[in-house]
Length: 69
Image (cartoon, rainbow, N blue to C red; front, side, top):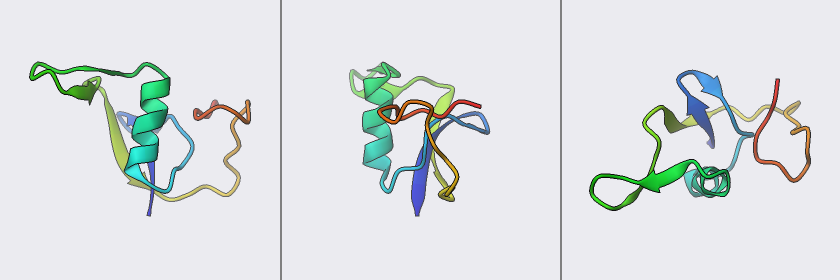
């Protein structure tokens, strides 16, 4: 199973093998903030969801976690 970061139904990142790797990509992008309980959380409109890996998925920048269409 692969995972990616989504905003509503739009896939924002490339596929990752684990949810933890997606979390780290969101953290590198500054999309993680302290929640009301003090724990780090994704902004409300982002979520990590399972997805099918896309063999044609290539980020514009090979060092980038995000895909651009």
